[in-house]
Amino acid sequence: MNPETEKKRMAMRQRAASTPDTSALNMSLRDYMEKDKMNNFEEESDIFKNGPTKNTKSVIFSLNNEVGSLAKALTVFKENGVNVCRIESRKAQHGADTECEIFVDVECDDQQMARVCDVLKKRLAHQQSVLQESFDKTGIEELETPEVFGMPWFPRRVTDLDKSAHRVLTYGNGIDLEADHPGFKDPVYRKRRQYFADIALRYRHGRPIPRIKYTEEEVRTWGTVFGELTKLYPTHACREVMENIPLLIRHCGYRTDNVPQLCDISRFLKDRTGFSVRPVAGYLSSRDFLAGLAFRVFHCTQYIRHSSAPLYTPEPDCCHELLGHIPLLADPGFAHFSQELGLQSLGASDEEVQKLATCYFFTVEFGLCRQDGELRAYGAGLLSSFGELQHVLSPNAKKLPFDPVSTCNQECLITTYQDVYFYNESFEEAKEQMREFARSIKRPFSVRYNPYTQTVEILHSPQQIASVVSELKGDLSIVTEALRKIRGQEETGTLPTTREATNGNGPDACINDVI
Image (cartoon, rainbow, N blue to C red):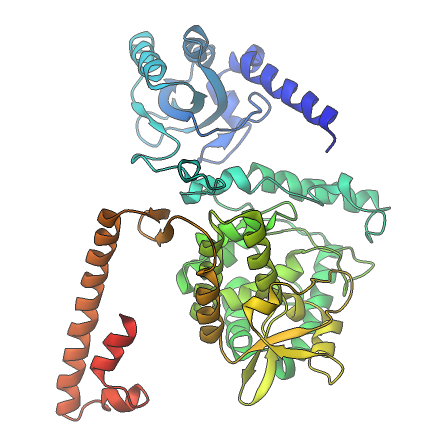
């Protein structure tokens, strides 16, 4: 985007935030909400254009379905010099059917927010049933920002991905297709791409992913890709893919006459490995994409490649994502490996992120692993490419053991087959290699993902380390107790010995391995 276009868009956003369309605001709240039938909060992007910033706070209040009540409430923000960034509405979760809940993102300091809440309580007292006090978008508890440490910004909460998921580099809509793209001269395809881009750009974390009604042509294209690739999987794909494809067929509707829905896939992954997916309009930067993995979130496209070239795509599409990435993300070991790559990228320099992205490219996208004495593909770029999947296991393809130090300097080729491919003996081996490689990343802190709060914790003080150790002690006590009970069952002969079950290692060795 050129600077002049960006200036115009910024000016439009500022005008939208400072002078909302009062004709829209004065309509009946019932009419306002009928624009969207969902009960979840939905962004009214036609009224407020600019998104939340790190100073954004939020307030939720309820109103009766009366003409002008929303305009009256929003006047309070204007009178107190508070900039409204976004407004959403939904039917009241509690209370009368005539009530609606309004969610507003604003930019202000604590004093302004307290003043606004005060006035709202007084001015809307006759019709207000609920008023929830404001809260910072960074969360209830204060989180240190990476800038404090002189590092690049990175998301701390899973909801922060809403800020980075829209920074699409290329192919964000049907307008920006390159001249050599198969769909460049197809106006119907370009319009369809814009439709998918709009869905992705409107999506917010925690909302249901919209179901797509794919066209007959899109279903045929998907069916061709799915049918051709799954013929090769028994002889070319790794064990984990072969184990998970039947589960995806059973639980997510993988078949030639149906394009699977992201909402079903996300639910399936959440139950299997804790991963989820969110729609994205196109390419993200390496930094933004890897940051999503740190939260076990995979950014996934919903559009399908052009029907004129079903076995080729110059960009990631849902055929690539659903056939290449999803079967592996359903494997616990691979999911853990992907998340660790993401965590290692947080706060890293541009140069270090590029090295991590290259390692990701030659493992998660184009990696091989040895199973039962033979090489098998686990990289998504291979599993979603009919020609390259055959090429990589042929004698013509150069294959070397994976070593992050040398692999990170290898050139990544997009439009041709790779000059060299890398293999591991197992995902666990790749994970250990990347952990060792991560020690070279220059950060004044370490990070840890907290699955209970879905936040990334910055570990830089003895108190924080002590808190983590305390949690680990609790986990280890559970493991120790379990091993004690297993040992008792071994002694009664009801179970094989722990030494046999752990390839010669006893219970103490198991605990030492964990430590």
